Image (cartoon, rainbow, N blue to C red):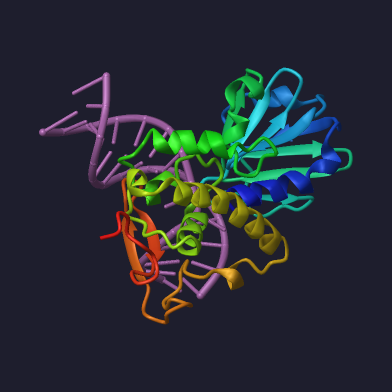
Amino acid sequence: MPEGPSIVILKELVQPYKGKKVTEVTGNSKLPIGRAAGKKVTDFKSWGKHFLICFDDFTFRIHFLLFGSYLINEEKNTTPRLSLKFRQGTLNFYSCSLKILDEDPDTLYDWSADIMSDNWNPEAALEKLIARPEALVCDAVLNQDIFAGAGNIIKNEVLYRTRIHPLSTIGALPSNKLKELIHEVRNYSFDFLEWKKAYVLKKHWLVHTKQICPRCQIPLIREYLGKTNRRTFYCANCQVLYPVA
DNA sequence: CCGGTTGTTCAGCG
DNA sequence: GCGCTGAACAACCG
C-alpha cells in the first residue's frame, strides 16, 4: 500500500465523495475524530505517502506506514482506525497513523517535493541533493523531504534503471547523473502507478525481490544498506559505484 | 505457522 | 544536543 503512487490511486478512488457530507464518524482512534460529523469534505489531497481528507477548518492526515489498508464500501473483521460514512457510501481506514492538522495543508507541505505532484520541481530536488554531498544515494532516494512518496521499491528499481550503485555518495555523482536520477524517480513512479492500477506491478520488477540480474544474468546482491538500513537489491556488475575508479 | 516487510517515530544511550 | 540503535506498531503474504 504505502508508496506515493498507491496514495494517488486512493485519491482517485475517493473522488465521488468530494464535497459530500459525513453522516457518521466511527473508529478506534483516540483523536477527536467526531469533529468530522456533519461536515463536508472540501478536498482529498496527497503529499508523498500522506493522504489528506480536508474539511473547512481541519484535515485528517493518514499515513499507512507498512501495514495500513483501506476499504471503500466494504469492511473487514477489525475495527477501523477511522470510518467515514456518507449517504453514498463508506470509507474505512485500518491500522494507519492518523493525525489531525489544524493548519492549512498549503502552509505545512512543500508540494514541489511530492514526486507525483503537478508541482514537482526537479531543480529543487537537485539543490537539496547537492546540499547533502556525503549522503549515500540509497538513503537520499528515501528522503521524504527530497522525494516525498518514494519508497523502497522505487529506490531499488530506480537505482538499477539508472545503473547507480546504492553505496555511491551524492557528491561523487556527476551533475548529469543526478539529473537523470531525479528524472527517473518521477518517471518510474508513474510507471508504478499505471502498473499498480493494472495489477501488474510485481511483474515489472527488475531487481526488487529478484535473484538474478535481468541484464547480465549474474546473482543480484541483497543487503541492508545506509542509515535507513533498508533492504537493497542491486547488481554489482551493472550498477556503477561512483566515483569511478 | 513462521519469517519478513512498499514505513515512521520515539526512547534510550553514549 | 547530537547521532545512532533498537523497539514499537500491527497485517498480510508466501
